Length: 307
Image (cartoon, rainbow, N blue to C red):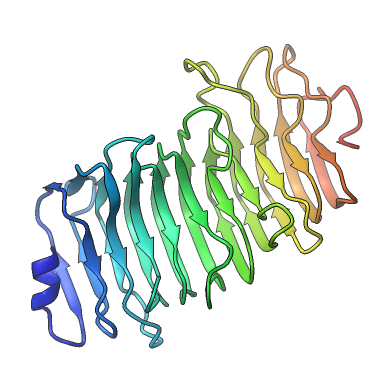
């Protein structure tokens, strides 16, 4: 793929794959001003397997020239394991990846599945799955010109290994991230980076669940964590929280260490033998505004929002 990219014209182009295969040399789409679309075939027909034990499998880092729609289509990218020192995809970096778009994709089995770099905004991820990564997604703090209008639409984040924490981690620092019609299945959403940075996150029409509760070494975990920074703002609307363990489940769904949470049109359920103590626990001056909270199980033993 590196050779194919080098052969494209200076303005960029498409690399079309009709079948998959294995590779160990990292692929770097990194010529300034030369965007690319890596295109496969729908339905997991094209699976690329990265066999090296270090490095980033694919990097998109070629500029910020208001050029939309380059990126990845109809490709499954598989790594050597979620405990490896590998990254599946990096988007952004020295030159950036403004306007990058991933559609009908799967990234799985890396130490970090997806990482954002600098000079990146207007990034769009649609109808995909990011699963079985030590970190499924990390949007780090400390980047340059990065994080505005990062959107995940109809994407499933799943199968984070125990203890399932920090799986989708929006660290903040000028980041505005929207999750629409997404699923967080055995994968924690964390917002903020301690007291270092804050993020503004919207979650709408989405689903939180722990389907792997019976797997070996599985642990209880907070579905959502907001770190202790007053600038963290999480807005969750028209979304559903489901607890699957019939006994010994979590005592809460959210841990709010700071910032502000807005809930609207929320539903939740937990089995009779696994009651919650609270839906969310607040600390360090965290604040909640809630409209239309629906406990469909009637199974919270304490206050819905405890301290």
